[in-house]
Amino acid sequence: MKIVWRREAVTVRDVYKELLERRNIAYTTVMSELKTLEQKGYLKATQQDRAYLYRPTRPKNHVIRDMVREFVERVFNGSARPLVVHLLEDDRLSESDLREISRMMGKKK
Image (cartoon, rainbow, N blue to C red; front, top):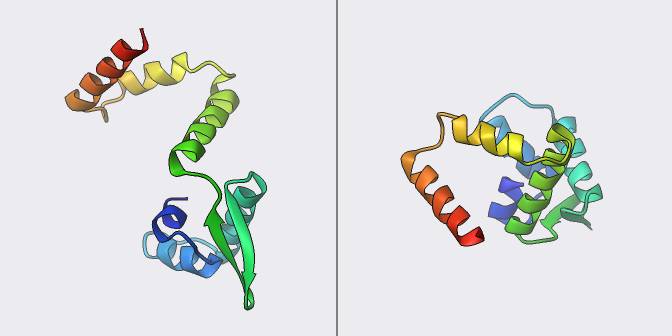
């Protein structure tokens, strides 16, 4: 999705070439993933010549929200608490991140 959002419209080949620069991946894997994202309603495909052109259907923040909700439902049985605990205990969060989270929590009260 990051590639699609950045480019606004892509073919399977566009995504495949960009991903291939970072890691070894099969063309069919990229094709399947784009088709799955289309079926979930995140992408819309239109035929252009012999290829399909994929575009995002909704704003990035809406898609991320839906994907996180789906992840929480699937992995944590709908409870966000274990995810939040894990993130707070993760060494990847900087002091700045933690301050921002704390600030946001203050707004929710």
